[in-house]
Image (cartoon, rainbow, N blue to C red; front, side, top):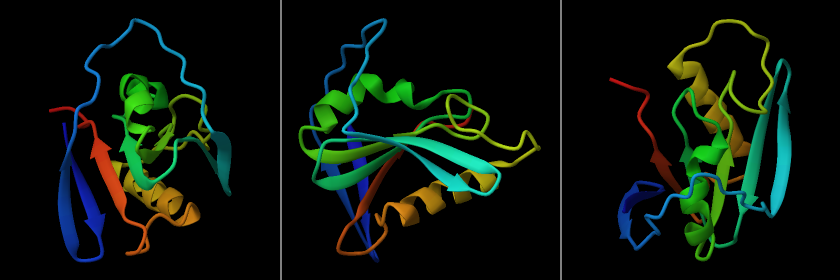
Length: 132
C-alpha cells in the first residue's frame, strides 16, 4: 500500500506491508475517542497508536469502521486518525444539504484541531474515492 506523506512543500511516499485479511466484523479499541464540536456539527473521531499522523478519510457512505482492517497494523507505527463524515455514523450535523467541498473543510478543521498540519508534524492522508 502506498501512502502519501505531506510536509510543508515536500511530499514523500511510504510503502509498507499492511494486512490484507479483512474479517467480516472487527472491533478496534481506540486510544482516544472524541467529538469535535463546531456549532451545528459534531465530528466523531478516533485516534489509534502513536508516531507520525495518518488521517484516513472514508467515502461518503462509510463510517470510520471502514478502515478497521488497516488500523491495527498502521497503529503499530503511526498515529492513526479516523472519523465519521457528515450524515454518517456518530457524527452529528444539522441535516442541511452539503457538498464534497464542505466535507473537505470538515477534514481540514479536524486536522487543525488535532494540530496535525504543522510542517514538523506531517499529515499522511489515504482516502477512499467518492464514487465514479
